[in-house]
Length: 303
Image (cartoon, rainbow, N blue to C red; front, side):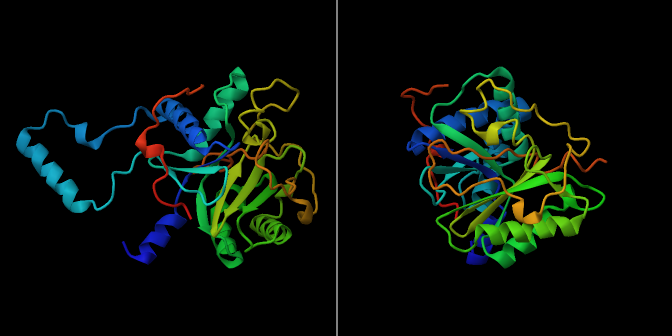
């Protein structure tokens, strides 16, 4: 694969960004179990292309095998594959053939409802619905298109912006927030900032030279997608109804973020994401000592 093709593939990656407390290997194993459990509920079991047609005769099977060898120079891509994230206490799991936003929202919805704790070391799970280079000009170009389904006229919503950078000095927080708020305002002046209970949250996570973006709902109700906090009973607002403006009120664009800088991962809280493919606003265990599957051991690099 040429360098240009490789860069293009990295820019288009989708998956789940996961933070943990010092134990990345166990975090990856927990995440793999959780993602697999709920992915089967949403999309059915992961299929193996080698066993889909059991009725084939030997000759057909051999022809199919030869064709696969000829056309594939890479490993078979599985539903989940761990990659090096480029930051300590952060795991990135690439997804194939599913919507990471829908999947993670289902996980948090279930945990919020049942209050059943299903992880020990995972802190947060943030779907990554789009990626681009983490330079101001690249981010503005990419986000101007990426955000259209949620914020471009006639669509509108109350929103807040959350930004965090790890191992990167390409962007300043205030500059990113100001630029992004201006972009949302140009898509539709009716979009209003709401720092208390926004309908949507725009999440921008930068790791080294890669910018991961998502659009979120239920950010407050799901405790910023913190798996340890969402199972605790308290008086936080219930998940929002996609209709209406959520009681938004105009707030200066410069105040469009509620996140405060934090370099500490333990106890970190952030994030909740909406379906990556179809916005809702467009119309109108414990693992013990089990063996860790090979595909969740980081293979390659995310950045």
